[in-house]
Structure formats: structure tokens, C-alpha cells
Amino acid sequence: MSPPVSFKVPQLKDEIKIDSKSEVIRRSSRLLPDHLKEKLKEEKIIEKDPDISQLNEIIFDGKIYYTTDFEGCASLCDQIISRINKHPDSIVPIGFDLEWPFSFQTGSGKTALAQVCVSKNTCHLFHIYKFEKLPLAFILLLSHPKVKLVGINIKNDVWKLSRDFKEFPGQKVVDNNCIDCGPFANQVYKRSCRWSLANLTAYILKKRISKDDKVRKSKWHILPLSEEQKTYAATDAYVSLILYLTIQQKQKEIEEKDKQEDN
Image (tube, rainbow, N blue to C red):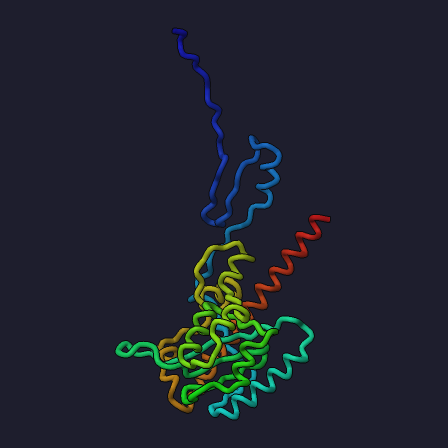
């Protein structure tokens, strides 16, 4: 038998380095083939998630339209639908959220409040707790072919509404009118997170959204709502809309950059 052949294995020094301070992955391309060198140039900086407690609070300071009666809800929804029908875009995003009372003894109560944020400056609060059924205009608004309800775990809110009001077409709205900002953000920002509204607001907007239990777990079914409750509720829907618009803008910038590079 021939004696074993000895040889030296080259040391691939510094092939992969991780700088814990900047959270940037770096690789030496000295020993890599050209196609891998090019790929490494495209590596992204891994952003460190912000410390929410250090961020400034985001609060909706626009116009809040608050209605507690069936006719008022129907009238406002008719007005919104009229504007949507005249809107030049084929998709009209609406920040959407619900509030309901909760008890550790009885669990989740009936939906009390529906928040509809139609622009950066306008939010509608519909107190629907005492409604035996939803106004037709309210249903037509949420299921309008142009409308996309945007928010975090938005489909869960739609299912909740359909359980509390049997005439609401939950399946239709889930299938055609919902965009969840969590998966949308993961797609655009190349993340794989299960986002809460607070965490996504911190990551995308670099702002802190209030989740004060005193308000969040308050008696949403009792009329009238306090100014603190109104602002809290409107802010949730407002932030949902701003998150969607910000992610959408980021997506457009990435697509435009890719087109320029292809050319």
C-alpha cells in the first residue's frame, strides 16, 4: 500500500465575519468565483429592530366623524361610497379596525366600534354595538369592488364582524377586499415576521403606537365614548392606512430601481 499523501488545506481566513455592532454581514470575496462576488454585492444590511420604548408616539390628529345611530352610519357610508365611485384609481385602500368589550369571565363581546380611515386626514367611527343589523350602505362600502381594507390581521376582524352580524358577507370580503400589512411588509422588506400593529409601526414608521390597557380594554360598548377612546380608535385605523401606503411606496421604489438596473 502506498503511503498516505499529505497535503495542506488552505485556510479560508475571514470568509465570513459578523459585526455585531452594525448587524452587517460581510464576506471576503477574495477566493470566490465572479458570480458569487456579484451576489455578495447585493447583500442587504440587516436592520436592527428599534426599541419601541424610545420612539415618539404617533397620534391621529385629523378630523374624526363619530356616529352612534343607524341612519347616521348609513348616510356617512353613502357619502364615502360616492367619493370612491369618483376616485380615479382602481384600488382605494381604507384603514380598518374594530373594537369590542372583553371580559375574562365571558370572553369577547359583540363588536362595538368599526373604524374606517379613508385618508390621512379623515377617520370615521361607527358605533354599531346596539344595531340589530348593519346598514346596507356599510356593507356595500366594505365590499365595494374598489375598496381594500388594510391593517394587521385584517381578516380576523372581518370574520369577527360576520359572526356578530350574520348578514355581513365575511367570506366575500375576506376573498376580495382585504390586504394584511404584515405579509405585505414581509414581501417588500424581505422579512419573515409575525407582526403586531405596534411592532410593524415601530419598524416601518419608527413610531410608537399607544397600547394603553386602560383604553384598549375599556368598555367600548358604553355610550358615549370618551375623547381618549375616540383618539385611540382612530389612531389604530389611521396607522393601518399609513403603514399600507408606506409599504406600497417602498415596493414602487424597489420596482423602479430594478427596472433601471435592467436597462
